[in-house]
Length: 302
Image (tube, rainbow, N blue to C red; front, side, top):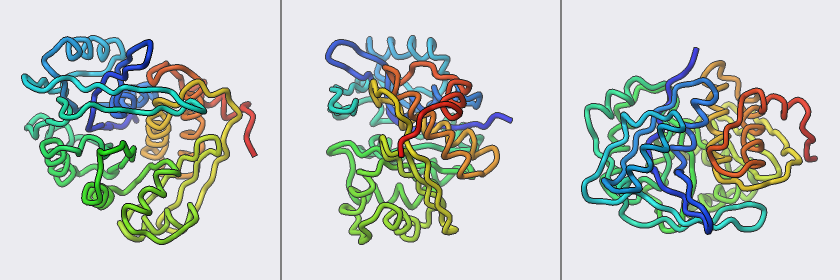
């Protein structure tokens, strides 16, 4: 049975040196959720401008519903300037005070969240008060069994109170390994090794599962019952990593929401992230069959 997954947060145009593509982690995640056969819902806000109009057209092409995408008469549609650096890693400069910073708490948003199996959120959308307060109210009202914090720490877009409130609301955290150590410094944590630090986050914030993505080294899952799972990376030619984290999250949730098997979900998610990193663009279509084929025959890193 397909699951209903709501992604709350930013819709932005990713502006590359020679191209532009619709983006934002929630958009990328909903696209991947739908590709997995689940039902993804985007809860965001765009401007009443040309980029907003273009965004609606792109969402239609991607078969993402815009029924919960609010339109702002004042603030512009979000933009992020992106440069791809070494190893395909993107560097972001996100414009301030965009429409997605002003997502309103509405009856429609509340109804959507109350019907979800999972609510996914991050920290970027909390950099200003309106969206931050809306998210906090929706988290309080949500009966979803899974509240999934997909942590992406953008420069000047988070602080300790935002991090702590986000962690306290989550029962699953997905974080890149280098950003796990940013959490360590921001929150005054003590452990020095990845697994131990993830366990410290679990203990401190009452989280069920911490998923740590480690680029070429794969990913691991640390659980509050003491269990630990690791999946090595795949030997792929990295094109760019934009959207690979969202693909990982969508794939993990696809399996986990169905059977609560963390190891199986981690293995599938790691392959999904690798498959997307081997393509250009966060919304290049990758089928479940392609992911399982990579799991079956892809060369592993050691």
